[in-house]
Amino acid sequence: LSALYLKVFVYLLVPCIVSEVKEYTRIGSKYYIIGKSKVSWYDSLHMCRRFGGDLVLIESAEELSEISSYLKKQGYDASAWFWTSGNDLVVNRNFQSVVNGLPLPFTAWSPGQPDVPSENCVHLWLQGPEFQMNNWYCTEKAFYICQRANLNNIRC
Image 1 (cartoon, rainbow, N blue to C red):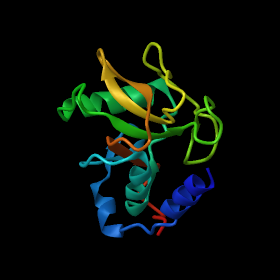
Image 2: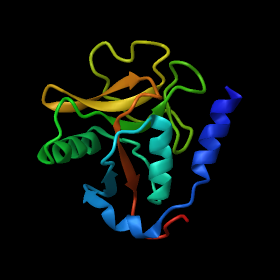
Image 3: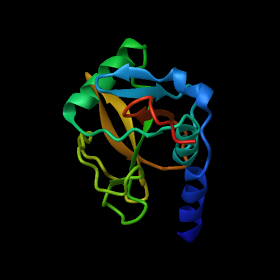
Image 4: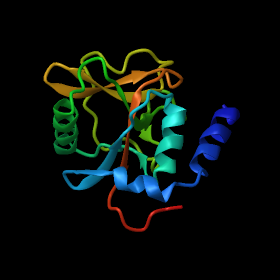
């Protein structure tokens, strides 16, 4: 487990690329980048840091609905999965955000989820009319969503 913490720590030290910040899109009250490539959860941490942000921390049903509507308008369907900041890597079945280390303030699990105890990272997938949460293997590849509260004070 210490190797895991080291890997996450190294990813969090990655500097951002200021020129990438312009790719953020305002959705509701926050700014987001939808990753165009499929990467592991760990690599998605790295990519979001490069963009001066964090993996998305969904804080309300309204925020999830806004993101879900945006993704569907962009043409994403049930085959597109998106990493979030949620994980239970520290304590199994205690899902928290890698952004702040706190329990997830909002969850919208698909029916029967979370299921497999060794699936430790949270992604969004389209189930019915809306995107919902599911736990999945952190080393698998999915798209990712980065967020920023604003475009000021870029952390580089």
